[in-house]
Length: 244
Image 1 (cartoon, rainbow, N blue to C red):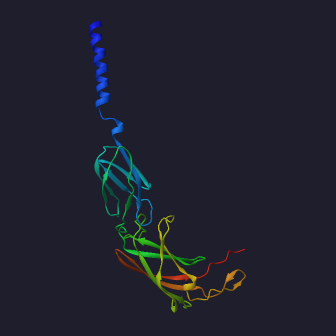
Image 2: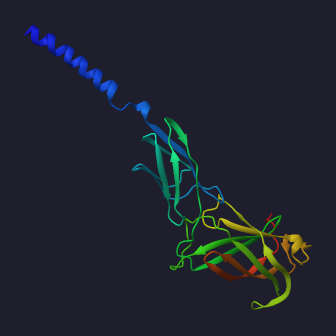
Image 3: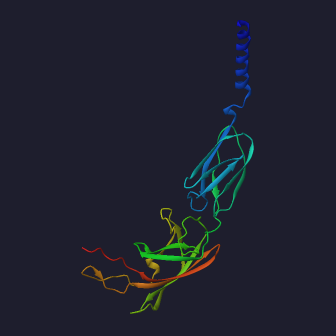
């Protein structure tokens, strides 16, 4: 019995030695991590799936990703997300940590059928907020940042009981900007007051503005999916003062 044990114990030790020194070691593997962002606005890409060597990670609102236990060698990294073009790149993975940032290019606004425009007067000018509307008449919630351009015409509303266009007080391109903090109308624009040909000197009587203050705005939004037109009436040029 002692002889058997004498031979078994060295055998176990040798087996452990072989497993430790000849099996794949964790130090022989790598991780790939980085940021995954919309290339135009820098926002997180909604619903992105990243695949390397059959391993993948899915992100919904996160700006970062991380894949572990990747074999050090040449790999193809593929990232896909709804309404974005596929991102594909060959990367040489080394032992340890590898940083690969992914910038994805927007492809389209999903099920885009029309647009809606909301306006409000702010200190800088007349602010516009653009909503994308789908075939069910609902606002589109998740969409990429796309190269868009906007132009418009602004008229005084001279109608007493109905909407009626009067003098044109603005015409031309309107610079867009992206507001990441807004949920639906991320594409915004401002027509500066010095570009609007209207007298904004207001009179107040008992905290109520009594000057003519409404306009009619006609805009055309140029998108990769075509041009979309919209008319907004009851455009206010003044903010109502707070009641005391």
